[in-house]
Image (cartoon, rainbow over all chains, first blue to last red; front, top):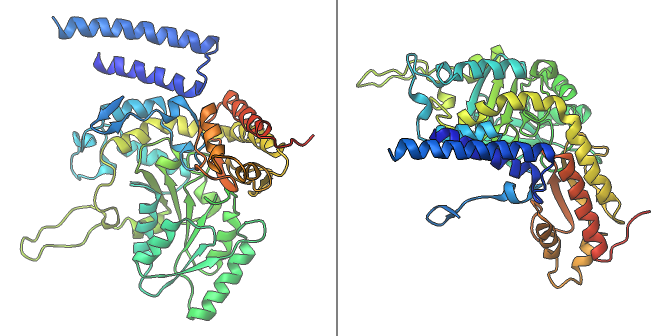
Length: 53
Length: 393
């Protein structure tokens, strides 16, 4: 789960690179970023459960 | 934000369009970044190293397969990974050059080729470029004849850069190799700006060695690179150790002296491997990169007085420009002097042009999206007009 979250952040990092310097995301990029952020929230929630149980 | 005491997290490529001439092709893919996270520990690829205990035999992660794939991709018979192209030059130089031997390179060769020759105490002889900054087969033949007259023997090796670092010009390696081989001179193809950027076929070029740079052109961490060889030359440069300890009688299996045993043993190699599928794919679309380069060049050329010093139309995205009669004119009276230019670019979100440079400078648009290329083009024109330069109509 740690890697999954880090890798999701990495995919977000690539979106930042592809849209630098203005970071005005087109529709496809926005949808991708939204999906990644949703995944990240789920992954962080799972990490909390696993590590803090 | 820091990632260690005194070490700022680097966000250059997240915050800016980076047109640094040497950094463009080495930016990591997402998969390479992920590999670096997982394989950052030292010796991380060695968990499953089994006899005969050599890097290129490891199957997990699939390093052996990667070696085979890169060799097939470059159309060479054998490949080793090396810590940067320069270590590839060094391995070949150590194998063929002895003290006092003449060695050919070019007037546009990278300094590490000179150092590789110097280390062996060979003598460098440069093939001159022509007025358009190109190295030709004819100039190669003339230089070989000159060397023969000077030394009474042939050069023992030729280093030829397919695309040089100074102008980003593409040189006719195939024709040059034909000439060199006519005199029985082995040829090392320096593909630091081509392997991983555009298609390279070693057998078609006829060269003996292909050297590529992972961190310059294969979306890999530094220092990384590849050295490919033909079957005949591989037996020489990748020869195995023959040394034995006089007391312990130890011998060292199939380690290769020129590789100093194993070479890339962690994140560098796995980063290069992780990027490889995308690198193989991207070389097929170099035309898109040239299209983006053209957008930026046309904008620069629209500023009155700007000249392209590289061959034009371009065959590569690394480009050298002369702005003595345009952006440098502004520097004469600007309070920031020559630094106004890089400063204005940075304010707009662009980095990679040497601070202070306004006369002759280089940039590389490789890896930019078409939107970023249009942004770059607009930025150059805007800086020109904001500073009172005229545009060609």
